[in-house]
Length: 631
Image (cartoon, rainbow, N blue to C red):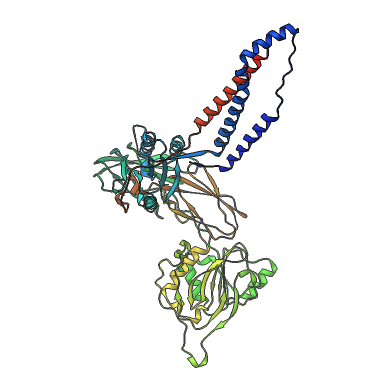
């Protein structure tokens, strides 16, 4: 026997206290009688009852001592261990999107919960219960619970997710349990077929019929492209296309087509949408066992920020930069303004500087940086401006002994972050040669081109929390402007500097969505399909990540200081693999099960409550008896 709360045994100190009280308490009672004759008669009567009278005080003391001892044990919460009398039961529960498929009003997940609770009900008393819940990750929901009702309640409170999930994610956890307990009884509850060893598979699928719809994001022409599939049989599927013309308006059906589909084979479709809509809803109107994968809403791609660019330069390589921004960056020629450093300084001093979303300083370091705008510093680092977040050290160039034709050969860096990978998207990584460059440190920035440990091109947030790109060399001091990588990188850097808030409008549940923090952003609030609001931490960040855990429409409300609130929408789809309950494989626990039974843990306190109640009732009865005898 062991105790959950051993300090509860301090209550046993009450036993010597009771004995002391019994010893020192007065044994005399005051009685009023009518006469000596009556007293003598009473005395004769009491002598006959005296043996019992002497015992009542001792019995009361014993009962009270037992009550104190039982109460102390109750507080200490004893646990009795009976060897080989129960089971240690472990459940691996699949909570992926396919478990929401239903038939007859009951989902696969509900059937799984019922199966688990039935096993708990039928298990031996004293058994322990542990559950590993699998969605896009595998987590231990509860462990080592011995109370059946508590375990069943915990199971009932679980909710299946909408992302993809494979029970293979739980195998490391299950193997650790199996290694530590050679009598572990393990159940795998899923709707996917697995070949298992050292565990029992409970399949909760019921051959339900299910259709699924997949759509690609809208292209610039407004063409809707997608496919439909039937997983259980050949079928004729009706595909409906509807528009709404504002965010709050109802959908209006514009067309419906039929597709003959063969079991398990995707049938593609295409639809030309008008360009005046707010969103297009595509859905399969046939009823099936999972309605969540029958509808996709396609929203127009969120527009990037307006792209007005001011280039401050007098260098000969200005032409390379200007043309790259126009051709690769997608900026209209009339939206690119070229001014000299002197003009820029005068206009900034007089407060009539042209308003732009991007300022490119080529070979010039301004005294102060514009705020709420993206900044490019191309060989514009001299250490006098602390707003840049960059510390200038010196210039590095070949010495005379290396000859006038010597060049440094930088290398590209592919950052591990999603944002960093987008900066290097489609870059061929041709060999770059640099004649001279500035040595600087930028601890808050991400490097994408470097020489040795010295960064040449970095991106990040400056001290004004605006997006900034730093080139440590002049374009004219390298062959970079002649390479196709220059145009590709310019496009990527423009998308980084002047991004749309979200990159896509169609995602798969379980994806991590990148939300760009645009200049002058005060707040971004993400509302899930169930109505839960999440305010993103945008301070000091150029982007935030949001994991999509629900299917349906997410809404983003973006508040900027100088603009009205912008409302954006995106759609999160059921993973295609979950629509067809794809998955399965072989799951094996290494080792051998030595015994099905383990030690039983019994911590039911009901017997203690009953025992204490009986003691108190007996003590009360003796007290009443004594009072009756004194009458």
